Image (cartoon, rainbow, N blue to C red):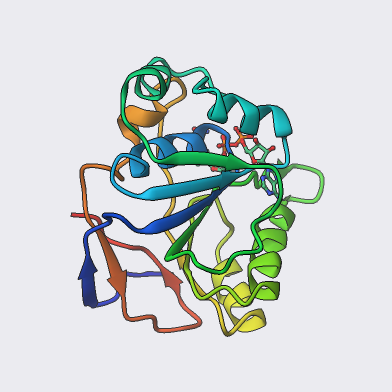
Length: 189
Ligand SMILES: NC(=O)c1ccc[n+]([C@@H]2O[C@H](COP(=O)([O-])OP(=O)(O)OC[C@H]3O[C@@H](n4cnc5c(N)ncnc54)[C@H](O)[C@@H]3O)[C@@H](O)[C@H]2O)c1
C-alpha cells in the first residue's frame, strides 16, 4: 500500500547537506541535480566511480550528466569510506536491488546495509530510498530501525536520460509527517 501522507513541513532543498549512497544511474543523476543547490557528498563501494565523480567524469552513460559535471558549478564530493559524520539532513539511497528469478525476491541487502550503517553512526538524517523495493520492505526496515526516518520515493527514469527524468533539482521535496510502519511516497511539486 502506498500512502500519500499529509504535508507537514515544506522544505526547499537548498544548501542542505545530503549524502548519496550508490553512484549508478539513479544515484548519479540525483547527486548531480541536488549538488546545484546543496552540499552533496557521495559514496559508492566502487572506488572508480568515486574517482570519476571527483574528476568531473560521469560514471554513467548520460550526455546531460557529463555536461553538468563539466560545466555547472556543483557542490559535489565523492568519499572513499562510508561517512562517519552524522551531519547530513538527508540521505539518498540508490543502491541495487536486483530481482532474483530463482528466489522470486528482490535482493535488498545493499539498502539494508546502508540503513544499518546509518543507524550505527546515529544518523538523524531523513533517509530517502530511491531503489526499487518490494511491497512491505519499508514497514519491515522501519520497525527494525525505529530511530531512522525512512521514506520510499521510487525512481522512474529512462536509460541514458537519467538526469532529464529525475525530478529533484527544479522541484521542492516535501517532508512528511511520518506515519511509521506504512509505505510512503513523497509528493514532489
Ligand atoms: N537505472 C534505472 O533506470 C532505474 C530506474 C528506476 C529504478 N531503479 C532502481 O534504482 C536502484 C539503483 O539502480 P541503478 O540503475 O542506479 O543501479 P546501478 O547498478 O547502475 O548502480 C548501483 C551502484 O550502487 C553501488 N553500490 C552497491 N552496493 C552499495 C553499498 N552497499 N553502498 C554504496 N554503494 C553501493 C554499486 O557499486 C553501483 O555503483 C535499483 O534498485 C534499481 O532497480 C533504476
